[in-house]
Length: 113
Image (tube, rainbow, N blue to C red; front, side):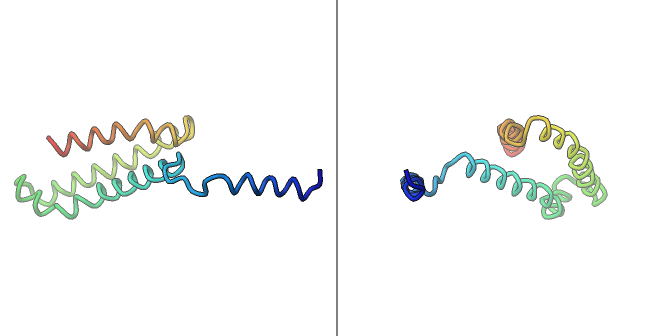
């Protein structure tokens, strides 16, 4: 066989494959990671946005709101190390896919309760 024949067979096989698969595993993981990043940004900024309503409803002053925000960021920073170790040991795919259902349950429980 000539080299041109081999290359044309490869080109024909590649053109027969679908060019884009909307729900491929890579795209699903990408959408999950983007969703988690958006959720993380929401949780980081939500205290500042709803602080006046929280202060009025819970009858607390600004120092209590600051303490709750500070506690959130300290916990967020402390958990970076164990999450990084889990990512290194088990891989991001396994850690994130196992963590998503838990996060959904926690967020749902917080929204309902």
